[in-house]
Image (cartoon, rainbow, N blue to C red):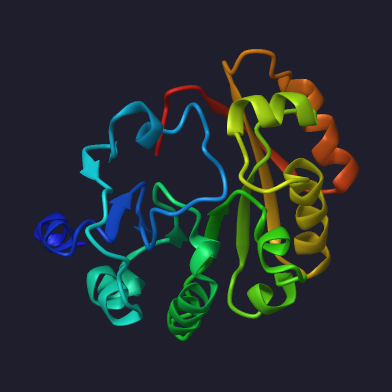
Length: 209
């Protein structure tokens, strides 16, 4: 993409930012979790030199403008310092726009959308979303609650159930856990993903983006 792209995204409150050849879309600061390892809960909104603090939640049009031509990227990824599925309608509208160009769409998510909306939304997502990266974060409910401080009851089990639903809906699902969080057992996390039948990716504490 042109060198001017970061300037454009900064003018639009870092709604879109480029990493690893992908375009990341930052559509909300709201989240279902209050993770103790999240930058915004540690007095910074910066990820890889991008300030992801939003002055307002961008409209569908603002996100598309900030993104530019999606054909210049390997993937379009919904990921900021909030939970993208908090704005499900906007997310699906933008994903449908991107899919016209046959560019893969991925969502980095906490996997709590079904719990939030009280219904299974994975079928809707699967029509325009190719991949999900779901933050599992811990191998059991106790550690999950300790590190992620969920706002909704039953979050750990709901996240696991959502992962299975997403796989059954036909999306490519990868679950992640962070190596370095106290008490987190990475092999145990991977065994959970094997039982669900999805991929696993190890992340490293304090390496964001």
